Length: 186
Image 1 (spheres, helix red, strand yellow):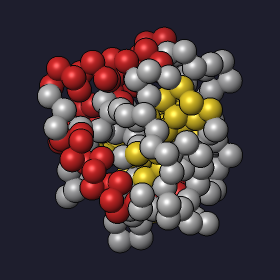
Image 2 (cartoon, rainbow, N blue to C red):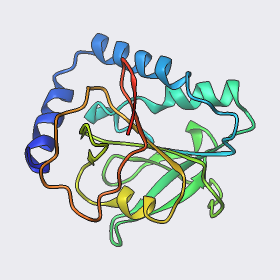
Image 3 (cartoon, rainbow, N blue to C red):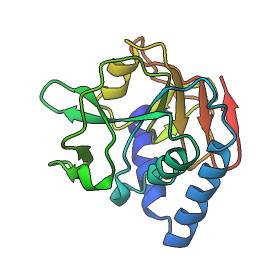
Image 4 (spheres, rainbow, N blue to C red):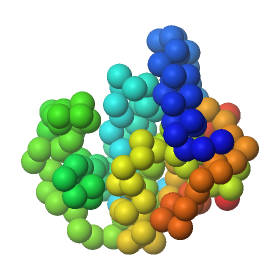
């Protein structure tokens, strides 16, 4: 399948999720996330969910990390839609977040983070068995990931699809993907 078709279907599938199923899937994602080895992680970059699009609720993961691994610095993105680039900021809590024009929560006062990042939790609409992902199509994460050696982990409410047919040279492969039932290594 082509990315445009996959994107359309994935968005449709997500929006059909009822509240109960959505909650169960997110709790299962958290359960899988807790099994990761955080012993060498000093800085973790994680996206903030667009709940209206039924993205995985990363606040569950953030809250768990904050309680169980307070030594890990949590970094969240801020998007510049004119340049299609992201800046990374220290997460100061939900009170520091505000929705931008695209309904995406972003930090307001969190310090700019320019240091190393050890692990990136990446949003996606779908992913394939080779570790490629389909996002919203703007390339924010591919541009960000090409300049980091961080471990790249996708977060998906659904299992892998067979193959994305129009992968290109700018698409960055995931190292792992967490689903509600498993963690897949690529």
